[in-house]
Length: 181
Image (cartoon, rainbow, N blue to C red):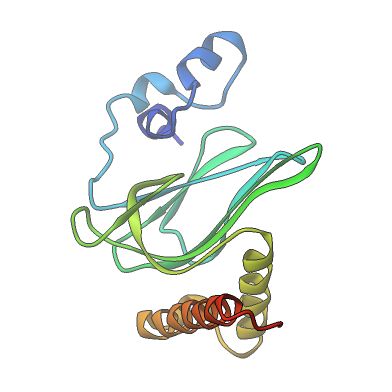
């Protein structure tokens, strides 16, 4: 539990500031000397009612680090496959919705930089926007009925990503030709 400060600064946390204004369950003094291994992938998980929901949908983090009651960090080792959802909204509804199936990898080995993920991960499948995110979540639900999502191979996820991209390209081509869907 002493990893709060060592990892909190990676996500722009105000952990030191909040330490002086309200009680927190971490020993930030001992956490400052805790090194963060460079080969791990750190995923920011946070929730705020009707504002933000950043969560791990599937995958087996090697460790969970609790920053406070709304924020945690999931720690993945290279090669782990997991899904990450980032939803944000306001009083008008959904403002941003992204769903990713990712593979944790070592720094410099084909990783893409994503918000909330340090240092980054390799994107196997992605969906941006409310309709695409809903479709991908529905697909994940259907797949979960037949198999464990965390045990599917990287190759299977890449095929799903390519089929999703191909479908979008065909739709764009039909729209460009003036076809009515």
